[in-house]
Amino acid sequence: MDEVRVKSVLNKHRKRDSWFLDDYSVNPYYGCQFSCIYCYIRGGKYARKPNELAAKINAPEVLDRQLRRRASRKEYGFIALGTSTEPYMKVERELEITRKVLSVISHYRFPVHVLTKSTLVTRDSDLLLEVAGRASLPPDLKGRVSGALVTVSMSTVDEELARFLEPGAPPPSERLEALGRLRDEGIEAGVAFIPVIPFLSDGEDELRRAIREAKDRGASYVFVGALTLPGDLKRTFLRAMERFPELIDGYRWIFKGGYPSKEYQSRLYSKTISICSEEGVRLGILGEIVP
Ligand code: SF4
Image (cartoon, rainbow, N blue to C red; front, top):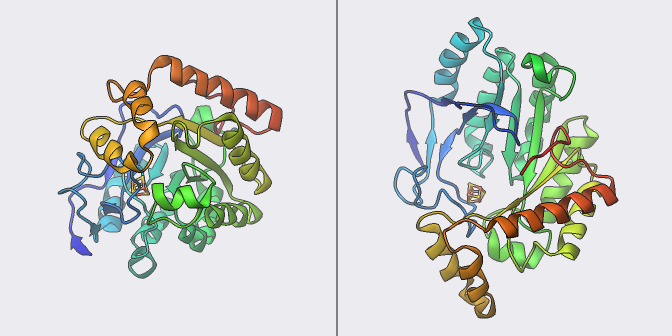
């Protein structure tokens, strides 16, 4: 993997993300080895060049400088780790950039929200507990949420389907096991079933099974989100889905403009609300998701 030096690593959002609660994001790598067929970084604006992988080798030092300034002004807010790349790819085991980034976050007392499909996140449970214990939360979130959140993501709990959709990622069963370990250690963690794939993992039975499996592993919360196929991604996705020729017309109809129709989204949202309430699972970190 290439190693690059960057000038900035902390992105400040215009407003807080209403689902993941982050005001900032940090991505320690460019690109991702997990190769999910629905990934929006494939050739998108987040890659340096399509599918190019690189480690931001000086990310911890740069973040130190950027957070020192933010902390001196008390501009605390959740930092999402891994919004446009996977922060725990295999190479992280050796490079430990994400781990060093977490240390910097802990030092400056910012809260963190790790988004991952990897089981390697469990390596850093010591640091995540330290962040949780030290974090200074924004005033409106104080007492409502832990200062360290981990959201494990997957588009299905079906192992065979996951091998096709997310070929480079650990199987869903291992991701759920990692979630269970984090929960056992006292870390607030949940599952994002984002994106669920129309006709394959968005049905009532599939969603219920997925939400139950997350609950059985102690998930603090779940998310369910629709697939979106902006720009070139629609063509790439449809090509990959030729394996299911009977579904192609349906996809063309749902994703006419690249985004699922309002009807599709509101059906998915209603299904999710009823399943979560029947299963006694919190939908969203604060239990107040608005689609
Ligand atoms: S794990 Fe995330 S960043 Fe990596 S390919 Fe999959 S969707 Fe993209």
